[in-house]
Length: 311
Image (cartoon, rainbow, N blue to C red):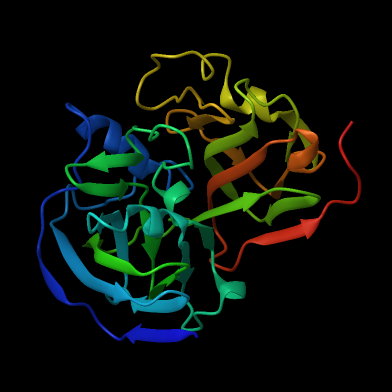
């Protein structure tokens, strides 16, 4: 049975705390915020604006669709926090998260962010949490600190597999700079190509693969030309343990591994397009790629069948 909940407002709005992060993270959070400004000039024009917190109470049946309308724009989401009840973390992690910008249609085909909810907060099945500045844990909350600007309206949709219980908090500030890009995120696996047209910049990458070792296949195309392998996109230091909160590392589990990197200090800019291929399907050893980026286009993510497998 499909249950639909549409929240036309929010449960509570009040002055809220600044999005929390690792110790001494204010300067690094400012760098994260610059990712959303496609020119790199900075996201906020009036210093450090006051934040507001919208809180959404969640108590849902299995196989439900929940749709929440975020506060009216222009606004910039500074953080999204998930507070699961003690009995439902696995249900939250397996739910599907979708975010839609500048559109009142909550259909999945309109979403600019479309991910398993756990991955959006640095949680991959069977692996340690990817504790870092952009995603991780703050107290009891799962947190995603990527800034997410929108001019008029935004929708947050969750599709459940199992019953959910808990809260969603969305920390926002009023206003958007003129050249702010829209946050996007999607998962690519199997014989598909993830692509985006227009101007923007890549902000992060997670590669999930079977076995304990790092993934070795896949390719990033930028503006129509091969840019690097996906492993190269992560950076040579990304696969070493003990890296800083902005770079990422390799997480190994008994049956799968994840390599991740947040391109906060060095985003990969594109002027016309980018695309991500991972080669053969996962059963043949190719990784699954989770890509985070900013785009001048608020529209949905484009995933198409790749014309050929990579060499």
